[in-house]
Length: 133
Image: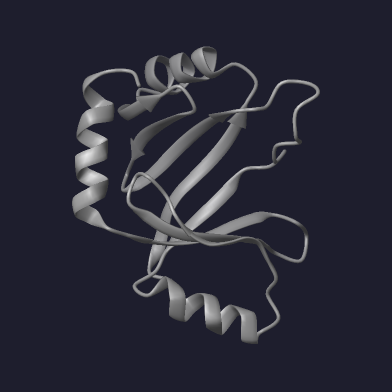
């Protein structure tokens, strides 16, 4: 069902400061950078950084999320639903080439399953690695 961990995402209070830490202090290679997301390569697992929302906006998650890569996301969604999983974000397409759904474990930890259109992913990634979008 699950092939591997694809991405671990952290919600950060200061995106620029966090990027500097992960890139300069930890020495991770930046894959791409957007105003709302920065991705780093870490041994085949992406480390993602997303800015927390400002006070007064909708609440953003307070904990990291783990994204699992699957071969058939629709099939896995169905299997999880039959096992009682309730999705907090239903199956949807992302502009970077992912088709994913979000749910939580019994303790409220955020988990995602994703299937990736690799051609679209590499096309978007190449654009994001050349300039800050």
